[in-house]
Image (tube, rainbow, N blue to C red; front, side):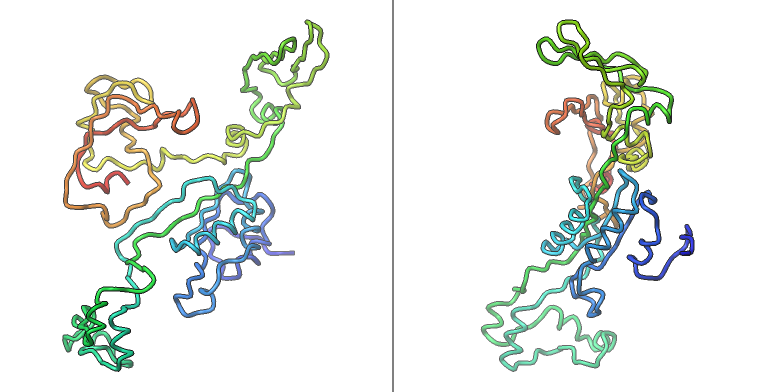
Length: 353
């Protein structure tokens, strides 16, 4: 018998072998930082993307509606292949990615001017030799001259400043967001778990056909009437539900607790909050603070590290006094902005992320 998978324990093994020991629909979330296939590290594991089987196993062990977060290189060819693998494994991928930006990347690019001098047999002053250390060259004052570059030939001078394959300094990693599709439930499943029927609807369908749904008990029926005569009845309990709200109610997945991810207000105050209409409901007054506003800003899909968006400019956000009702833009009449136009604080742009 396979040993039990323990929580709060790190396993050093092939991920597919470990996943195969986990029962179906068992895990609440998967976070994966697989090899990007960049061939950057000069080792075998970095030369290929993860297999499709690995993502299929992740899909199998996740509960319906649970999320999978996969780190990926922003390099477009690798990002495309990683996304395709995830989708082919069965995941839904119609979500915005999370973008993690930072200031500690190392730029790597081939210097055209230097390559021309090298082919011409010209050795630039201060060039680092094989076998020497960076510390040695720093001590000789050579590294700075080497890095700035001093082209020798006329052709190298003409192309000074050009680099091959467009590789600016990296400051971004992408986290792909995928979800295992919601499961289908019967209306009686909800009744059995909560002993309540959360539907209350009434609608007409067709000319002489009237379908009435007014009961709050799944034992009652959907009646199909023609000229006032019941021609077909189906118990509510047999109704199949596949919506996200039902999935959330049944196992707590297919949703994101975004209020727990709110960005704290940078200066710790809400001095500029003026109240008024809001997607959160009525606020306390024109000058009062609201419980919802105190939660901070609504989270974005950009994660900012090292105050990276600090341009030296200090800005002040507007004190919001109305909600931005943008449901039509998002294709849903019920969708509205979950944040007002501003909290009235000040600082760098990083405070929004």
